[in-house]
Image (tube, rainbow over all chains, first blue to last red; front, side):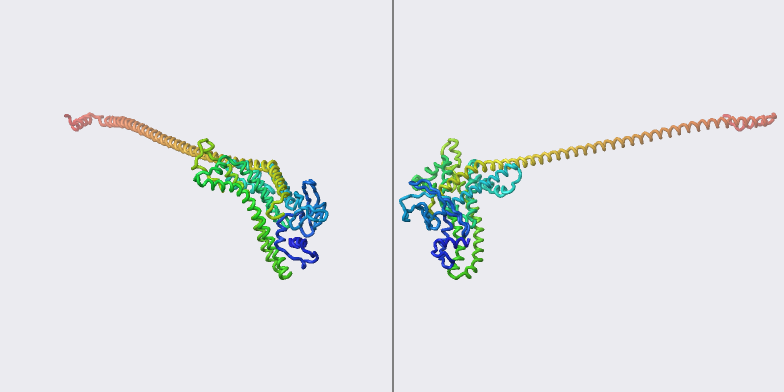
Length: 352
Length: 164
């Protein structure tokens, strides 16, 4: 990873020959690593050129390799800005043409990692399913032994307590969310890997799906509580109702930000620690940097272990909170079911 | 591609990827896996129930056996006691009977002995009388050869016997 870091800085450095001449910029290095890009550089010099897919109103869909726009080259009227990572149209003179809106559907590093995680999950779960079908009631074998406790945990500790008797309907969604986040968190911990769950677009989609799952399943009681909260004095209603409605959106937003911030923060801390070596190199020379390395490696190892915990924890928290939100939306109000009427004293407050 | 502004490409691919993943896993993985898990749990539960039932059955069977055994034991005791009683009674009866028989035989023996003695005494008496008479006759014959002697004898007899 260290080699990798130095190389990336080479892009912005004016001189590419010799490390001594490079100016190490910690902030830039970190941002570069936690953000998306159009190629996947596993290590120094080993770069996978991913396809760029663009849609423009005038030219339609265009697909070409990111190799063509590497290192500031212009291809077919497109230029890749290395600072922002955006592809934009340039005119014949090489000036940016801001009038053309370029929609970038490229298979970026994150998208590639995302697709890889999907394939990985499909392969793993297919193997697990086959294991179940091969020995119907025997004890688990192989990868089944690792996956089964997680499935049972989601079912017994997350779904059942929060969703009650109707839990089975939401199991596929909760399991998919849990394993998707878990696998992407874990893949993100590998050196040179993409930061998928630490990307706001990914968590945004997960949060929006959670929002729809919660609110499309909301029952009469859920909506009644929203527009006419029980046990609240009438004069407070103008205050409470907007708060409740804001709360509706705050929940998925909190899901989105929590996952994004936790994973990104973990990456930032690890990268900052590793960056210390290069800062030391620049400030006090190679000897100090080498001397510092074991200490930094110890801390990094420790933080990596914490990140491993966080990978499981965040997948669990996202799934748990989603289950709680769904639970509050589908909670039964038995008085209403029996047509007796709305009993103000017997309303169970939805969780969170 | 700034940190906090989601890029359209990733949004699009994330929707596609997650949607595909969800529908594929739901159809081909979660349903069979969850069904298998439930089936296995049901199997285990039913096996546990069966074991519990069997254990209860075993316990009831055991208690029944014990009851039977206790009954058999008490029956044996009764039978033994009865047999002993009968045996004792038999022995006692036999003893009594033997005693009675013995007594009877003894009695008989004693009786016959007594009879025999009486008969013997009678016979001896008769013999003695006969002998005495013979002796007396002989003596008398010798004594009474002469007349004088006869008279003397009569006289003696008369004098000795007090006639009153």
